[in-house]
Image (tube, rainbow, N blue to C red; front, top):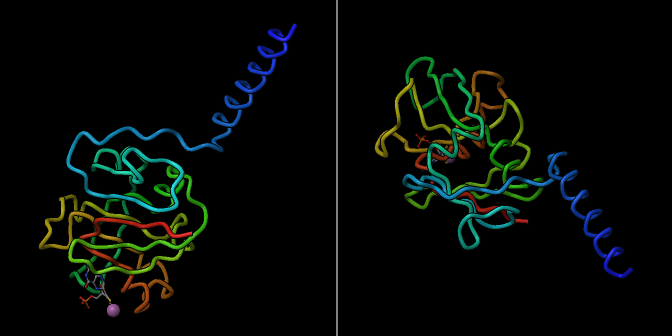
Amino acid sequence: MLKSILSGLLALALGFVVQVVQAGAMPAALSAPTQPVVLTVTGAIAVTNAPGAAQFDLAMLEAMGAETIRTTTIWTDGVQEFTGLPLHRLLEHLGVKTGRLEARAINDYAAEVPMADAVPGGAMIAWLRNGAPMPVRDKGPLWIIYPYDASPAFRTESHYSRSVWQLERIDVRP
Ligand SMILES: Nc1nc2c(c(=O)[nH]1)N[C@H]1C(S)=C(S)[C@@H](COP(=O)(O)O)O[C@H]1N2
Ligand SMILES: [Mo]
């Protein structure tokens, strides 16, 4: 009797988990990087693959849904083609919906990126410029880029300061 009630409850619980996962309400598990880690995300994240952190190699970033945008920037000449991961996709995979983001560069430059920038058509973490990987001396390997040409709202000193190049780490603060 008790056994059948327990197994009934277990079946219900499993069914619930399956439904939640299918509904996409729960972020998928994160595999481990197999190539050099280019980005580490720490703080208030729901998914990790290292103690207290989510670590990504380039292939993992690409697998989350790379996009290509074309825009000029104040640091380059002419229209540039950037390929990278829209910030909102990264955060969706990590189960992050609220908080503040601190983006930190290899040289310890850091800027706060508001959650409002993590929307379609917003910030992207780029690793290709005009089809080529960006070396560290050319603002790579990762560069936070906005579609500056899309709106004057992106061409502000505040957006420029959030355009962190040599990006290495994002800390999610509640
Ligand atoms: N890694 C890194 N990214 C950075 C910076 C920096 O010093 N290091 N400066 C930021 C600031 S405050 C702005 S306004 C622009 C400045 O670019 P500029 O120094 O070429 O004008 O890049 C942003 N991204
Ligand atoms: Mo700045």
